[in-house]
Length: 182
Image (cartoon, rainbow, N blue to C red; front, side):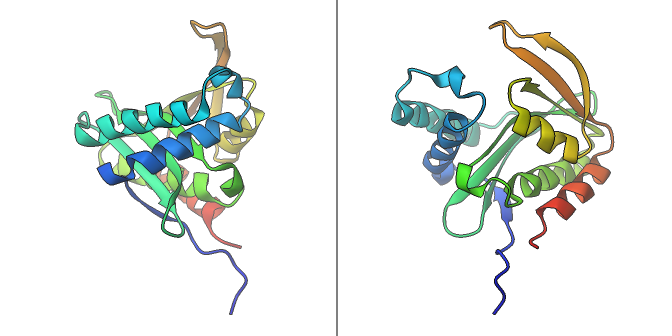
C-alpha cells in the first residue's frame, strides 16, 4: 500500500454543503494574512454568515456562477467561487482551503477544475484580486502562472494587486500538475 495522499475530488457544491463551506471559509480566513479583516468577530458567527451566503448562492446561482469544493473524504476541505462575465472573462471571487490542507494540492485542484469549466463555458481569461499582505496566496498564484498588475488601494485602504491568466487551458494543465499527489 502506498503512502501517497489521496487525490482531490473536485465537484460542484450542493445546497447541503453550505454549512461545511461556511466553516472552510471561516477557518481559512482566520488563519490567513487577511485575518485582520475579521478581527473582533465571533468565528462561529462568521462561519454561520458565510454558510448563509453560500446557501443563497447555491439556491439561486446567477448565470455563469460556479461554486466548487474539494474533498478527499466525506467533508469539504476547500472551495472556489467564480463568475463568468459577458466579455469572455471570469472573476475568481473566493478560494479558501482549510489550514491543514494547504500545500496538499487542494487549491491547485480547485483552480484547475474551475479553469477547465470556465474554458468549456467560453471564457478565455481569469482574474482575481488579492491583498498585498497575503504573500502565501500571491506566491501560489504566481506558481500557477498568474501575471500581476499594478497595486491599488481598495475602499477600505487595503493594498490589492490584480492577478490575471489569459490562457485557461494552460492554467488548468498547470494547476492539475501542481495538484497531483506525489
